[in-house]
Length: 236
Image (tube, rainbow, N blue to C red; front, side, top):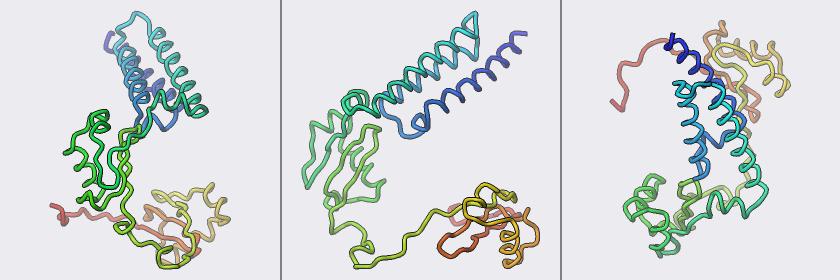
C-alpha cells in the first residue's frame, strides 16, 4: 500500500513540477543565472520531498513549492523591470580579457583559472588569444568572445553585397502528419501540399518524416523516412 502511495504522489509531483516550470518559463531550462540555479535546486528538493511522502501530508510540500514558485516568478518579473535588481540577483558581466590583457582579479572573482579560460576559448573555436579582442563572463556562466576584426569571418557587408534576407522555414509535415495551423500561416492548403509531394514522386504522406516550406523558393524541402539501419558511419 505504501508503494502505491509513493507511485501516486510521484505522479502528482511530476504534474505539479511540470506546471510550475511552465509558469516560470524557459529560463529554468536554459543556461541558468545564479538565482535561477538556486531556485531550481530548491524547487527540485521540495518535489523530492513530495514524491517520497516524507511529510504526513502531500499538500504541505505542494503549498511550499507553489509559494516558492510564485516568489521566483515575482523576482524574475521585477528583475526584468529593474536593472538594479537584475544586477543584484544575477550579477554583472565580468571582463576577463581585452586587447592582450588578462584581468587576473576578475578571473579570481569568477573562480576561473587560465586553463579553464583557454579551454572555453578553444571550445568556441579560438586556439590563440591573439585572435581575440575581448572576453566577458556572462551572469549565466557562459563566455562571450569578440574576435579581432582581422580574425572574424568575412560577411556580405565586407564584400559590399546585399543578399536577400532569408526567413525561417515553416515545418508543415512532421511524422507523416500535416499541420493545418502552419498551412494557414503560409496561405497554403492540403491540395498544394499533395501536389508538391507528387512532384517529388511521393505517393504516401506517411513516408515523409519532415517537410519544410521555403519562403524564398515557394517550395518544400522534403525528407523521407529511412527504414534501413546504418551499420557503420565515419565516426565509429
